[in-house]
Image (cartoon, rainbow, N blue to C red; front, side, top):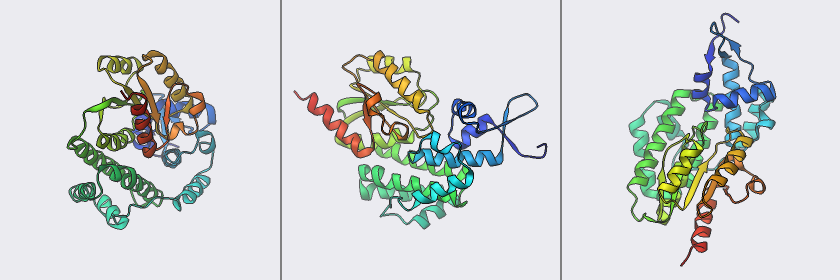
Length: 301
């Protein structure tokens, strides 16, 4: 083991998108990962475990449950990903080969230009709900095939978020109710889901304000009340522990005034409507539009 390359828990968190708390919970609950210890007694992860964790995160992003994938072998995880590959959506206005080539070559300016042109051609809502969804899948599958490295995945993520932010910021017609506060819980680092939701809601005239990711519950309550928001909307990636999400949402629901609606979406919450009383579970971006319509019908004067 002395010659084996090891990675700190912080670097594993950064490269896989799985929080330190999640890694520790899985270690206790499922017996994986099984880190070594460095000279200071801190967790240190072998490369093969990090690569397996990245496969697991891909499956979580597609809606798989931790209990179904964490204990699986690497070969079983790859087989699961290959099964889901045939169901991948298509980004009809972009050539996947050209897109991946720009990512692999780190051609960030050309990649950004391509994405900006697609926003203009498709409109913000279609770009977010169809193209970004398809590109996210394409990036994940390219990584599974060994065609992309971590830095290239991060390059894509940064560019897609920048393009979405700019398109949202330049979109006219907003400023109407509801006023929606967007954020995530502590330990949830993924903010792309929030941006995608904002991209489909803003063109409908909703006022969306994001306060970033990893916000403590008390701060969410304070911001929601002080800002006179109508809705608090949160996103949970597949990597976020389901029990932690459900407990946190139920706690937050009790902290918020009843007139402030609470919306929650993302892979971690699929099928959880029954356990989240008083909380609108949003299953995809089209359902976000349905939730918006429901709110406006309820509050119509």
